[in-house]
Amino acid sequence: MSGQAEERGFLSLGGNLGDPTKSMAAALHMLDASGSTRVVAVSSLHRTPPWGKVDQPDFLNVTAEVATTLAPLELLELCLELERRLKRVRIERWGPRLIDIDVLLLGNTNVSDVGLDIPHPRMLDRAFVMVPLAEIAPELMLAGKTAAEWASSLDRAGIERLESGQDWWRNIGE
Image 1: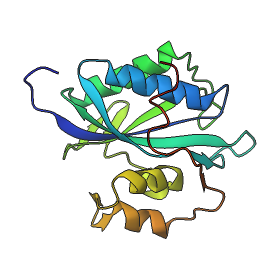
Image 2: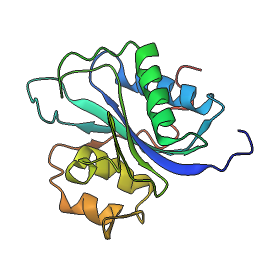
Image 3: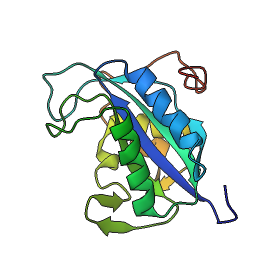
C-alpha cells in the first residue's frame, strides 16, 4: 500500500446461496489484492440461522479485520464492487444472498451517510456478527463493553463455530 496511514477496520461477510465459503474466500482474496486494503485476520466460519426473514437456508458468516488506506465511503464502494463481481443481486431485505459484505468499523470513525453508518448501527444486536468478531478481537471496545462481553450477552442459539480455523480462506480459490 502507499504511504498513506492505515486504519484498522472490521467487516462482516456472509451468504447462504451457492457456495458461501468460496464466495467469502474470493472476496477476502480480492480485498487483500486491492492494493488499498489488506486482510489482517479472519474468524472461523460460523453456521448461523437466518435472521429477519427466517424461511431460508442457514448462513455462513465470518468477520474480518482489515488494514486500509481507504476513506469510509471508498471502503464501502470497494465492498459493493466485490459483491457485484461475485454476482450479488439485491432483491429482498434480509433475504437469501450469495455474498454480503458490511463495513462494521473503521478506526475511530463515526459516519452517517447515505448507505453507510459506522459503527454499523445494528451490529451490537446481532450474534452472527458479534460472535465471529469476538473470536478475532475479543478486547475490542464497543460502546463501553468488549466484543467478547457483547457476544456473550446475545442469544447465540443455533450458531455453530465450524472447525475451519482462521486461515480457511487462504487455500480456497487460489
